[in-house]
Image 1 (cartoon, rainbow, N blue to C red):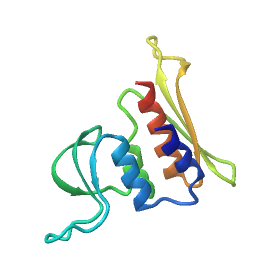
Image 2: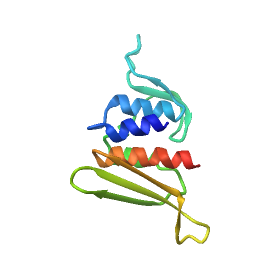
Image 3: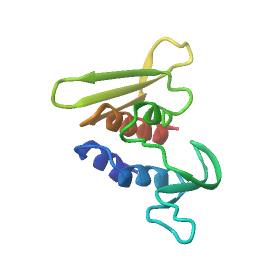
Image 4: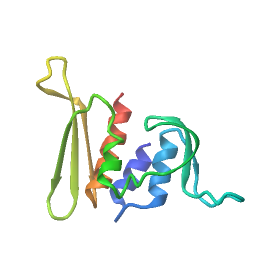
Length: 131
């Protein structure tokens, strides 16, 4: 998954290919090209952190939609900081300690991206690696 996170951080913009790579990394079966006779394209199915998809479903625009990217953040990681320095975006995710006040460095996930959505995707995938 670390190679995918590096590719997300280096991408100039979101894409269907990156979306499909994220679905595959989360354990879903991914269809990237049209399939005959129903003509399905860019779909996923299976069980993973975005729910169960018994039938082929169209992929969410994880790398171009803020709402879709936020769905990647695992439960229990309620703190989200999105920062821009005019050249890129940084997202910090935090998981509270047992006292609910402070964050351990082990319970932080940070990522950079050309867009907020890419940075969210990278940080969310890092957070999933901490679980």
